[in-house]
Image (cartoon, rainbow, N blue to C red; front, side, top):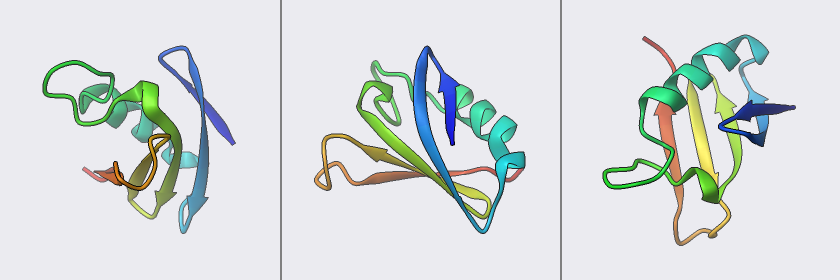
Length: 76
């Protein structure tokens, strides 16, 4: 599945979760400063894919394993 966010289509996979988490995922992406600039949690331009596992979303970078992944809590 793909979601549209900031004019980008981002692949999203769900493990122990389902598509009902999409609205919360988008809300968290918007509020957690993932779009770039100083103090950014994650550079959206480098976003390769998202995995939603239970109540957490893992953002993976195109830059590779050196950049690791960022975990966002979707509960709350």
